[in-house]
Length: 172
Image (cartoon, rainbow, N blue to C red; front, top):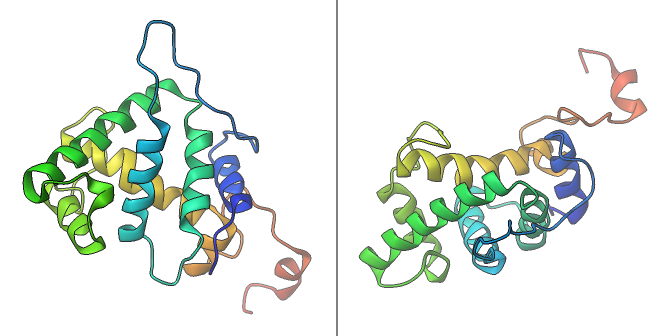
């Protein structure tokens, strides 16, 4: 199943972020956001957490991230989570997270505890990685129409669906 930019816009709409994509303007006096680093890391993490039958990951994640960059608080948390992943990757593999193989990226996510941590934007490093990286990617996927189909959600929340859905009835 191929994810598209349109899927990303639909997922953002389901989050109440509207259907438009907007870049982040750094607040005065703050460091500029390294969107390339964030995008590379999220795309690399998506290759680990997304099912293998999903394609079109890079443009989908890039478009979803673009919409998420409109929230400076979310961006700050995401930057911290990405720094945690990169720090762990450097300790264990002497490379940035995005430069690792898929198997090594999966191990880094396990090393930081993101595989079984509760999500908490202000919690421990593992809880922040779970919230800002893993859960955000999964939310984007399954809130999109294409991703929703993977788990049998023909019409994810926020998507009207088609007339065929309503004509089939509950036992179809």
